[in-house]
Image 1 (cartoon, rainbow, N blue to C red):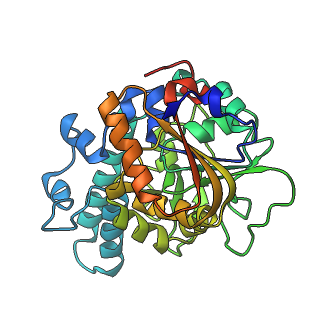
Image 2: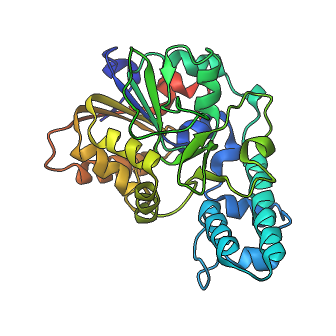
Length: 321
């Protein structure tokens, strides 16, 4: 049975996981399944041989981060055509910036204080979204009461310095985010960004050494591989796997093909109660299929699951779609 949020809200939900449905509820721009599709549909000026790198007979991915990383490695080991490789790299980077610009909501369109007021009631925040909405919302409170583990020199992450010395609510970007970067030495850093900071400045149009860290698409096994290759993403994933208490999942499709790593992390955790939003815009038949698929995955688990209509929760931000 799919209930209203008010029917199951016990006011002690300690953990929150946000999915792309949350962002789509704020802007339909996020409906794109792939930023590469944005490049194709909007006819963004990517060189044909650059676009070809994404195809199955080459790198075989829709994820810009993987393509940029391969080109950068080619730049490091190549002694010929270095300028051509750099030009290729910056063309892919420029196409990524334009695609994100097309697919990302403007700061003025987000009720950042409304989002923050909901986020503030949780002990741990997880998100699989790459966008800036959670970060902007937290910044609206001057980061008061929050932390993100990027408190080392140069706003970097260190797996040896992750202890929280207070009651701050940590946010975990499970698939990275636009404002995160990886350096050649594999250190992950954060770019400070406000509502006035352009996507170009956040991603870095002319910086060859810092690669944006966000997994915006890909099947579950591909996402998990990328997570395990990065110490920050792996740290966040392990935090989800070892979570305890209650967990609210909002705006997440929980599709086995694309989200099985998330489902497995939750199932292996110590979470006792799980509240899952069901997109209110679906037909009754699709809602039943969604609930049935999730129940089937958690069959045999001791986790207690409740389902509720997404448009009855404060995170719908008065947008019932």
